[in-house]
Amino acid sequence: MSENTTDSNSPKNFIAAIIEKDNETGKYDGRVATRFPPEPNGYLHIGHAKSICLNFGLAKDFGGTCNLRFDDTNPAKEEVEYVESIQEDVRWLGFDWEDRLHYSSDYFDDLYALAVQLIKNGKAYVDSLSAEETREYRGTLTEPGKDSPYRSRSVEENLTIFEGMKNGEFADGEHLLRAKIDMASPNMIMRDPALYRIRKVDHHRTGDKWCIYPMYDFTHCLSDSLEKITHSVCTLEFENNRPLYDWVLENLGVYRPQQIEFARLNLTYTVMSKRRLIQLVEDNQVSGWDDPRMPTISGMRRRGYSPAAIRNFCERIGVAKATNMVDFALLEFSVREDLNETSSRYMGVVNPLKVVIENYPEDKVEEFEFLNNPGNPDAGSRMVPFSKVLYIEREDYMEDAPKKFFRLSVGREVRLRYGYYITCTEAIKDENGEVVELRCTYDPATIGGWSKDGRKVKGTIHWVSVAHAKEVEVRLYEHLFTKENPMDNKDGSDFKDHINPDSLKVLPKCYVEPFLGKVEPGFRCQFERVGYFCVDKDSTAEKPVFNRTATLRDTWKRITKNQK
Image (cartoon, rainbow, N blue to C red; front, side):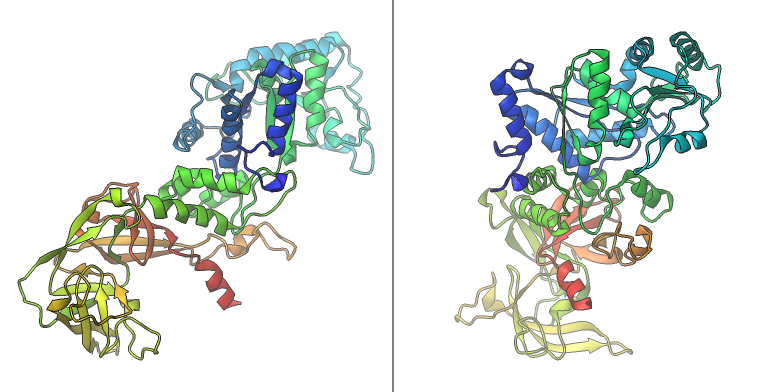
């Protein structure tokens, strides 16, 4: 197995290999301390789940620790709601940071003091260029930048202005604290990057104590240092930032963790950018961050994905060094694999067609025993009522049925799941010619779904008793985007141009067996022969709502292939 497909628990994983080598050489005295450092400016998505599994997994594998730290340095975009949702998501995935919950804002006093130290060491200065002038002075990828005229300010002047910035004496954007590195560096990150900016916005934890806030690149490495992190694992987009990470730590002479980059998760038929996800929410393209079509962890939880399925998916895709695109079908496979083992089977009819068994006694009600999960004998069984009038799936009847159609048609016989053999004798149509009811007969000698005379039928269909069924709403989900890579804009399109108009289909009148009328939101199950479903948070006792978590097999590729 190549290192790009190895999971985080394997010694061949390239990050695990680095840690093993560090432990062999005694680096960090054999300690392993990682962290998951989200910015609380949105909900976590499946890409964050990969990072969570990796960081907490590495800590567990090497007997170390993993911190949860909020990099909360931009109060204009951060909210308590996001902080709470992130903690809920990490716990739901099955990970525990114990007493190691941290915030970058915990270190604001330390960070300010360290910035002052850089100024005193001649390694930072206050720049007063406008935003437009700063861009002009920065240069381009092919042309070096040029020094700001304020770069030669004295240490004393820089200290005075920086303190004035802290005390609120200047307007937003009037000054900027920058590192003094090299305006001609080929790495534009190193061209005197910003360390502090003025932002007169209240912080969700520190209130109005501060009106200057440290930049992410300055904060992140020092937070890692203060927490004595050993291996700072991040995604590839921070590879160019690593020289700045190391520069700050080296020039302050503080404890130095090691930054290691891995490829972020890119998933087909979705977007993984918080900025784009926020657009979808704010433009009402979805119902919210937890819309079941969203790639957010909360959306997947609401849709019915299990923590185990997501963890297994993250293990399968492994830890790569090179950017790649993962097929959404692999995530769905992981979901099906888990739900197949853990979900009980129930009968639900999403596209109902009434069946009247004409020779069945009018007032008779029987109960048949159903196994909750045929693959798991410990799952037990339940009794399901049976009566004269049933609902079956409309797809289980065909008027002009081909030879290999083994379900109902006039004159054809099928087996009812755990019930009797029935034969269709007549199809009743409405004024538009649509079949609205089937008339059938049953064979009492086939109780339990087996014929005493030994005859066999090839078709078995599911059903619910009309007199006992619970009416429910079913929501069927497909991919939110029709394009495999919505962010591919070579044709000049915007990612929202590829939103799938059929990504949600609501079926208001579906029917399930009685037990499913009493289950709570979050309950997962399989509708036999239909798919995996989860009770939605919108569900009520009067009208339960079921989200389709996944089909029983991958129909999306077949559908799109047929469309092409």
